[in-house]
Image 1 (cartoon, rainbow, N blue to C red):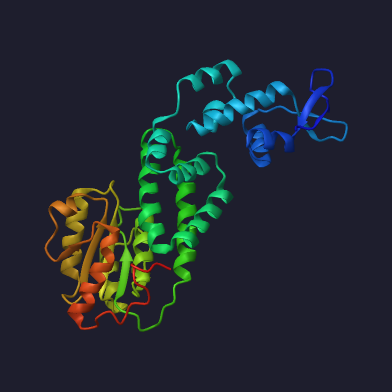
Image 2 (tube, rainbow, N blue to C red):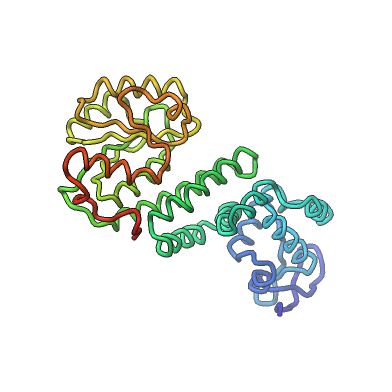
Length: 329
């Protein structure tokens, strides 16, 4: 039950109210969220009890319940927190936003991660992602959870359901979890093949690159990442200096078709013939018109087969792998 006390409401006489802990239990909104909204949006507006603690009148608690239902239906806090109760009730009658309907239809767990992102519960998001890695293993985590979740986040942003900063917060959380998981994979100085990874100068998106690195590391590859937006000349110089066997590049769906094709052709000319050039990601033209001398790996799940092919061609067999994708860690 909610703790009731005498609250001093600014501009009015004392009236019964609920403590912040009681409101958290009642609405599912965390104490931190309530405090942030109070500062950022001017609501809720709790009074203070005799001990100076926040105390929330019943009408504000009811309004918070409606707001929480709207958040569950896919609304963003910035769009609903400051609305009067009549407007909140009208929005509830409209039903869930398209993004949440898609997510719920696809997978309840994916919807949960979207909700944690949308409500800015970053610590809970990181913890839930870390738990998912341990439960699923890194391979399944990347292929079965992160890949479809990325698509849903991209759709949410395109539909206006996510702000740019929310997409960035999500990306940072995923990258942190992936880097930690990659760091726990055993490796040795002699791991083969040696894979140099990057994106072209016009490609700022690095999440796909990190997902590919995770699966390559599981296959026992030694990954050397240059990060994103590396000049083509420098990629070629680094490949030779680092004695790379493969150069792997990631392209997002937003990549320029012409830049991708011309850049790959130039890089292929600059690289020694002994170094393979791989390209993957969401740039569909790579599947339709693969440049000469470039191996297109459009599906993350195909990385294991490509590594096995490389080892067969070089006579290494499967001896270089530390983990098989069929037995994720």
